[in-house]
Amino acid sequence: MPKQVVTSRSAPTTGFTTAQKPPPIVQAVRWGNMLFVSGQGPLDPQTKTVVAGDIEAQTRRTLQNLASVLEAAGATFANVVNMRVILRDVADFPKFNEVFREILDGEKVTRTCVGGTPHRAGVNVEIDCVAMFD
Image 1 (cartoon, rainbow, N blue to C red):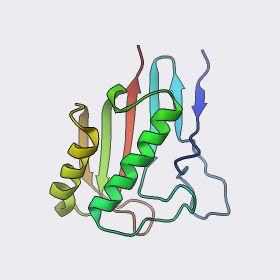
Image 2: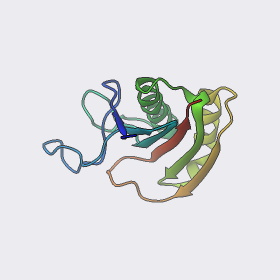
Image 3: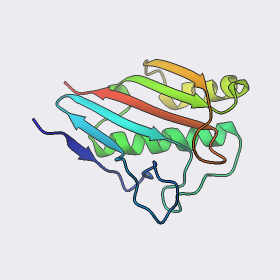
Image 4: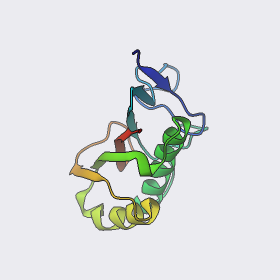
């Protein structure tokens, strides 16, 4: 069974260092009943620039981008089993967590959240995930 590349026009593809070069990655890959979604950040899908705002605004945009990729694969947050989160500043965790709770609206996932330095200036949160299908 070959892997299937999943692409959403409603989310940016990250993994590039300049807007002039094509990214070396894809938004998501489906293999059988598993979906692996590349890290999404708070980028505007049209301009591919970092959205203005605090950690709440950046978390909202990041989760919207993630939801768009999931939707392109025929999934929702209900299909997600694991998420990995990178926060530039771990002091942002309480505010990040409240937006996360609001957006996931009761869906339960496993999650790891660590402090680190996302590769793009101004990006304060990045999230990837693994989703499963029946």
